[in-house]
View 1 (cartoon, rainbow, N blue to C red):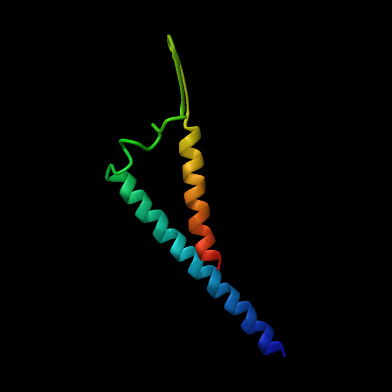
View 2: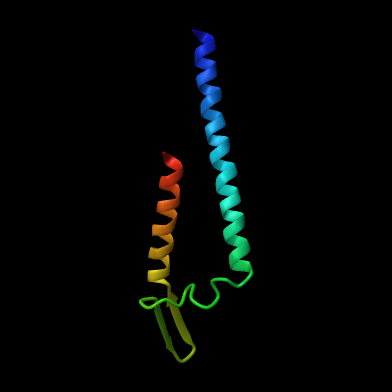
Length: 82
């Protein structure tokens, strides 16, 4: 019985390790795409993003970009959860 419990712990650790490796690869690919300039034209400049400038003061908050990235990450993580 002790052997079965240890095997179950090892199996869970293997799943966590696989998830971390996949998440690292996805993060590296997204970083490389953004670094290459793929999102330069539209990322952070979507309709609905708040940009306010007056004199020396400038405020920028990418609301719609944050929502879009949240939806994409939720979909990706839900695929790996199953």
